[in-house]
Image (cartoon, rainbow, N blue to C red):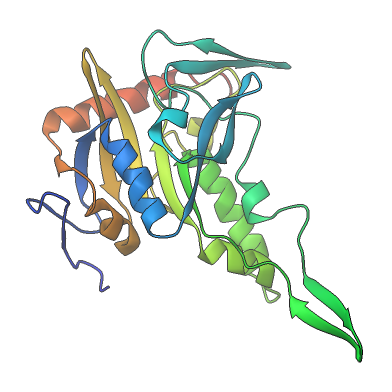
Length: 253
């Protein structure tokens, strides 16, 4: 699909292309998860488990940590209720996306014994993951991994195979914690590149919505399946205020 090609969304009323900014209600996040699963992606996102917000494979909107946040400081971590129904109202937790991109254990090949000796088969086929809720600082970390494993004269073929199957849905931060410092490093709290889609969560009174930025042709194709509408100036303002709030909350530099 050529850059700039437009697509109709689910309702047939709006077209999306790379660089566009749209909006949808929070229930539309379920449509995003379904659109990714329909394309063969295993969706990995935040979920509440064992007293922490961790990354794991999810199948529906109900598995996201609605209404939960985390409190972090030096040597301290705990989850607490937020008092609202924010789905991404937490900071970066104890897990990272690296365990999916560069797993500690990898099957390189399989050997089967037969009457004539043995036969060798290829190892596991890399799964296709859609990462939901990647923060700007995590995108910066993935970019470093890409530079190390893909950018030099010796390419890690296993990392390359996994990385090529990844769809990235970034989440711009609306709050920061006591150990956050991305603003001072120019790596957040808003994602500026390296994503297929980027979201900003908007909680304004009774309204719960997401601002959606399309970052790639693949992202535009997925956005075409969502119940989106054109973003208003108020949507942009609400998203900008959330980012500014997160910047002001940075605990370190």
